Image (tube, rainbow, N blue to C red; front, side, top):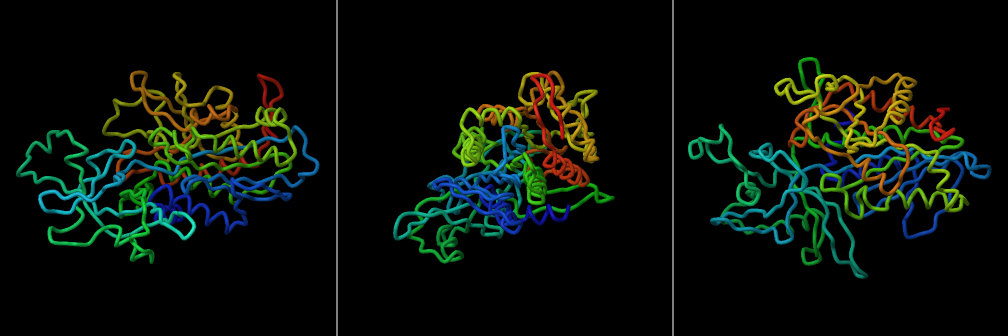
Length: 436
């Protein structure tokens, strides 16, 4: 639990979460590969690839590359690194009645009211000019840079009975005093020893400065920002960095960006990032394209994204027999409309992995009259069509600026993912799989 909070503290956005994962992988002996270069592999090699600063795929290769056959397969676990927040617009300097404000737009689907009256950090990346072109620099000011102040209850007594929030009018962050002449790019340039005039553009976001804690009378809850979906991302990281090379399985951990806005970006699950990496691994190992398709048929993917835990104050919103609870174990998600990739076969395979790993699990569907969300699993299948299951950990206040999950569930997920990375899944026939 505490190690997760250590990971969460610097992971203020997808860029920094990717960077933390990269650092941990390097410590564990992983080697970085570049997409624009040819790859050469070693037996039992451990590698990772970064795309556009905010997505990263790590993989471990078998010990016997010289003797591999069509029995090889891929064990993939995927999650996303982004969370709902606010992004600064390109022309973000904004004066309102003399005060210095920041012009932002909503990123994803945050609970807007939860962002009022909180000290807010500014972080992300800036693109700077170099002697030969441009490069990105990650920035995290790590201080209370702005705030979205609420209106006084004296002026708007209806605040406690329900007020519609307008993203352009009510959610403009207060950045500086009327008489101040400081500007954001100058602050960034000073901290990171850049020339302000060399900053060309930026992807900057707001984040909650309070990075979380363990809470509850018995320390049974994690209360923190961005639990969705950095909790599952951390579990994948812990599982894959400790995974051992297998004889016939390539273990893969895929961390995407942009899930909260639909995944249709260069580093999202709807891109070719995962499919391209898997294909390049196969081709680099000497397989032909048609043989790569055979390998995929023997492969399996776990889409790990947190789930809606039962909220006692809103009990009428949950399915009467398929609600899930904080500290009840890993959630296996399914939906008849196909928003999750889980079917009876993939559910059974994952349940067996959990049992072998001695990891608790619980089953979840929404009420029949509640549509619910979707995950990157179904999006990924449009690029890599392999058997897949959607899982996650139960949490409440999903998409709030501060979320709550069960403190004991994280270890259950790490156990199950470690077990998955030790399992070789083979298709015996179209209706039978074996787990070795």
